[in-house]
Image (cartoon, rainbow, N blue to C red; front, side):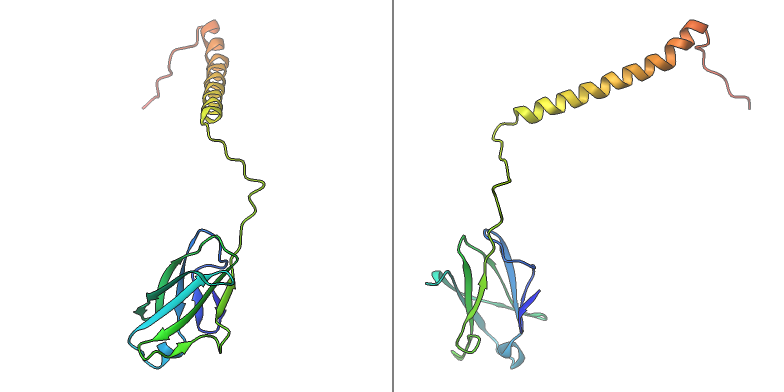
Length: 152
């Protein structure tokens, strides 16, 4: 997904505690720079500041980044000549989504799952037993329980 011209992410949403692949095809890729690095941080204060080398590929310079539990993901790009692509002085800033967790129920014990599975298997066995009784009891009563031989 292209969120800003020449910046692509491998996902539609930036979500907390996920890994995102960033592809950069901006001016440093277009002018043939050899080494490009990304400087990124999180939140208004650029917390957990990291500078890392990006890998040059046919699709641009790429890197994978783990998104932390913050409100924003901020970055800028630098080449080997210490030239910066910082979105015209505004830096690249993207909101990080925090999925709603109020509806998620986490059950630490597998007891309820095991009970459910056992009751499911038991109900299947009972249904099979009833089916067999309905088919075979009338045959036993009438004496018609021998397999029929096919004529060749």
